[in-house]
Length: 239
Ligand code: HEM
Image (tube, protein in one colour):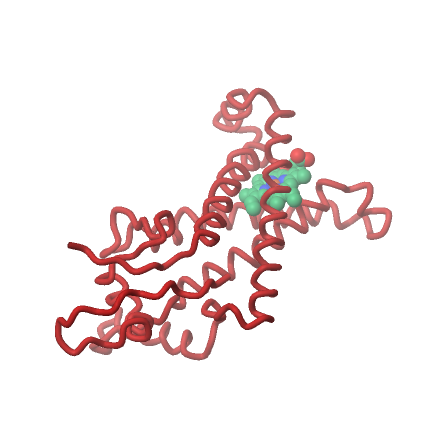
């Protein structure tokens, strides 16, 4: 029988579901505005019930996305300040060494792949890409939302500049998600066709040991043979 370890808390799974849903809604209602002259954009606009509906859904999803991003950052800062959360997503020197070793392994120059802890360098890169890219989308989205208010305090050039940044950063984020994130999380060899851990919160101990051996060793100690491992404690929340 497959044995499982807890990888994600309820809060983390809930946050992922919110980001996933709002991101899809934002992409579906944002890109038809960017590529308004195409047939598919017109198809989506009429399916949604017109441009006003589309813009309304985009703005509401944008507000939900912004509030959850602030909540996520706020909770992380408070828990970290209270030392109730391990900063397992913070990049460190080892991540750079791991990336180099992985590249050398892929080129056949070394025999072994790096051993990863709770999150590997690719997962950290994606996480920070989402947080920092999300902040750019929120700030430029708010400028487009409230142009009159913003230009009472700041120069008017900010409006077209924000539109270019919002539009292109949005496209880049979408391309990163559908290529890099979907590949790494679901389609990569060893994971295909689907990794359910972010939805169920559980990961098989076999996969944990293979993909995050340092975390596995910390949680269970390295069993010398096939001794039964002690039950997994729930890992402390991470951002
Ligand atoms: C994070 C994912 C997001 C994506 C992929 C995205 C995408 C887009 C795109 C492609 C456009 C059209 C730009 C153009 O005409 O070239 C747009 C417009 C806009 N976006 Fe976003 N966006 C995102 C988040 C947000 C957020 C967080 C907000 C609000 C805080 C927001 C508010 C707006 C506004 C106000 C417009 C102008 C259109 C209108 O007036 O309704 N967006 N977005």
